[in-house]
Structure formats: C-alpha cells, structure tokens
Length: 196
Image 1 (spheres, helix red, strand yellow):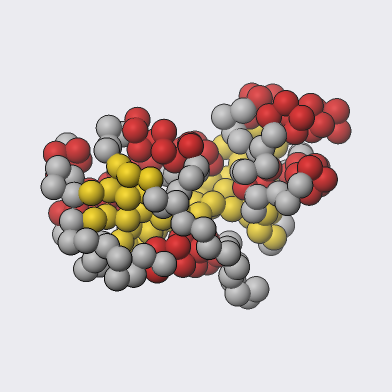
Image 2: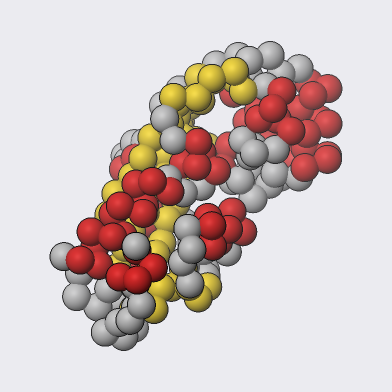
C-alpha cells in the first residue's frame, strides 16, 4: 500500500483546492497543506498541456532549496482547453457566464498537470479528459452561477455540481481529472516516484 511506502515521508500539497485535498484524504494519504501564492502567467506561445505543465512546474520551482530530505511536494494546475483557447478561473460573473455560453453544445478538453518534487528529483505528468456539454440555456447558466458560484474553477464549472448532472452529456477519460486531480494516474506515479 502506498500509505505504508510513504510512512517516513512528509507529503506537502501546495494547493488550496478543497477538491484536491479531499482526493488525497480519500486515497488514505496524510499530508500538510502549504498553498503558494504565485502569479500564474505563462508564455503566450504555449498550448494545451504545455500550459498546465509549465504552471505546475512553476509552482514546484518556488520550493527549490526549501524541501527537507523526506519531503514530497505536490503541485498541480488545471485548465479547460476549448477551441484552441485556455479557460482558467473566471475573473468575475460576466466572464464565467461567457465561458459557459461558449462551452454549451460543444466538446472541450480538461487538462490537469501534476508535479511531484523532492529535494533530489522531480516528476511531471498530465492527464486529458474530453467533456461534452449538451443543452445549457441562459437561464440555466444564471441559476448555476448564482447558486453554486464556481468562480474558483477552471472553465467556470464543477462536474460534481448541478451542472454536471443536467448539462454534461459525455466524458471520455478520467472523471477525477475533471474535478482537479487524475487520482489513478496520481496514485501510480506517486508510488513509482517514492520507489525509484
């Protein structure tokens, strides 16, 4: 079991996301939260998973030289990639409304990158899930934004919310990746990271 392998390690999660924290708890892992406040700016030429890879690594690099020998740091980043455009967290209500209007009746990719870092090594990986929205009218969008306030979520929605029940017609790939952490891939990569 991974929990046994990690017995002598200190897991550090550099994320304030309650969803990622819950996933780690559900995996039976003990960890400390150490969110980092950095400006998430990336070079404009980057595309799709290049963006999330860059940002996950950028967050990890902020801890360079600060990790103890038994520390394992986890950083991550999620975006919605739609029509060759990255949709991150909305700036405000109007921005969120515009995002959901664009996503309605179309398919997009949700991309999450994760960086595992210790004092000696680093591992970067990502996962991609295709999500298809069905019908979503303006009244539905307004209802969702007012009732669920998804302003801390990439693409202005949470698949685990009301909108996932009524508007998402199909997903191809990892469900947990859309929520914010590809748990199966994460579990296996973390296990291999500790063993290697």
